Length: 237
Image (cartoon, rainbow, N blue to C red):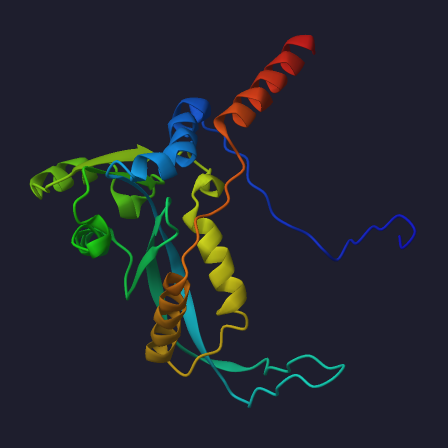
């Protein structure tokens, strides 16, 4: 295995969308990613929103030992559960700025509160339109969301772009969650929920000191090329 550089102890997960309308749903989102920088100068914002759910506050029962030369950090394998938080986060595609807030629950009411805060945030001042990029999970209440947003009578237009099912990898905010997992939540040890929330909010404040847009490489052209190749293979089979 050494000679062939095979590492069976390493793995990564992947997900394939089975949505029959994948191209029709993903195409507009990928178009938005490509034009976000240009259109942001004209007053149009593109915002990826999602939740990182059930983040546990685990209090270690033994003291964590810091790393020393040739030895990694040592953490206790025993802990006390101190509750969990639901993290809602919005990523401004053009700038990389994030807006985050923690909740005890994850339901449509919490999502409404989060969106209300987003719409009233300074990042939305003077905008002509906001394009929300969302998955169709129950928290986002796809059948109710448009009606509720219209009832707010906002000064800017809000358009929702629903991602294909099982295609969370198309949501740029998932990259932020991945960074958060590595930088803050590994290991996931905190004194209590208040400590967890404080460290989460400190992290997003740190990110916003020098925000950078995601360097997105999966374009609509690449998607169409891939699907065209797959269709040709099916026809040849």
